[in-house]
Length: 288
Figure 1 (cartoon, helix red, strand yellow):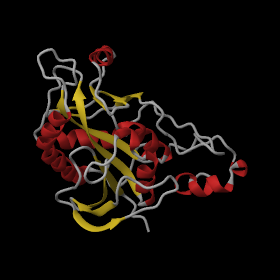
Figure 2 (cartoon, rainbow, N blue to C red; figure 1 turned 120 degrees about the vertical axis):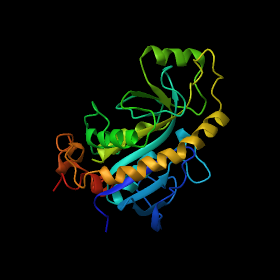
Figure 3 (cartoon, rainbow, N blue to C red; figure 1 turned 30 degrees about the vertical axis):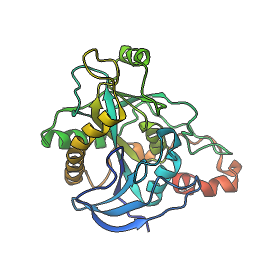
Figure 4 (tube, one colour; figure 1 turned 135 degrees about the horizontal axis):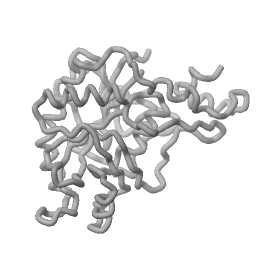
């Protein structure tokens, strides 16, 4: 049976395993949307149940555009996760946000192309609200935890998600800066959208590795630069996640768990049985 109250952790580039995780089992899941990035590692962290998934697979096998986001998020839902904390490498779009700082974004801009970003369709229509894509309760706990870990944290900001796998041109980087965004990355959408559809809380721990390519006196971003700085941040990220478990409330007081209450449009009697079966763990509590 799924373990209610479980927290899902998605590890980004460089974070392929969780030190301090008391592992109980690894679970390989089959999903209606194909295979997830890897097996889910279940266990306890800070005395709380967690499930860990390396976003790009162990050994970093998948490009951002190749990730099966639906399978990854569906798998967490199947395991009983109520929250997802996403750890991601990002570039800074503001001078004051320096490499090795941590940003906790509360907004996103989607610049991806052609990614499947919804569980719905094929006979079931839903339109969830994404005005505030980050769970306020989970975000507040992360702000408290990150500050207590003694690192420089920016408790808000906008994450612009690009398609990748190439980094931005200088013109693109300057365009995004003109929008006032804080950081740039390639993976956190459609994760946030799918988590909301699945009625799970979602928040991002963004590990700043570089200045993208806009900074006049800094070297343009390279993959090697990202990985070198990320290695320095991984220990910090693991400490934050471990400490987070002690401050997370057992229950949820946010509205994430009821995101579909007024979002489902299709009448249950008109939903194809195949679609209802595929989406049962997501919509089952809202249809008879």
